[in-house]
Length: 118
Image (tube, rainbow, N blue to C red; front, top):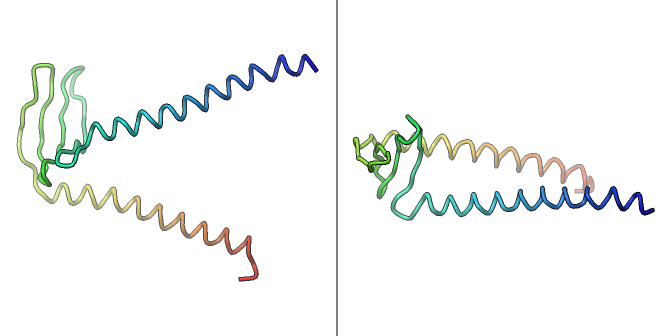
């Protein structure tokens, strides 16, 4: 019995560490999302050009802009067309909607299998 406990305890510790790391990562990601997007300003996309230079697509009060960020500062490059933002929101919203519809369909199928009396 002591041999089993000597093997099970380290396994339990490793599983607990993995679960804690998972929840800590989720918590950090949620905090990062709050930091990256505000009520008026949102960072839609950030693409690295070099080690310390990035191109950013940001939305300020509903208008999309292209900006450059580096160690020396941030520069506004140009205002982008509103269609770009609409296409981005339609593409990301569409994927979410498709997933939600598929997930709802799968739940309905499972419910029908579990409860054949209905």
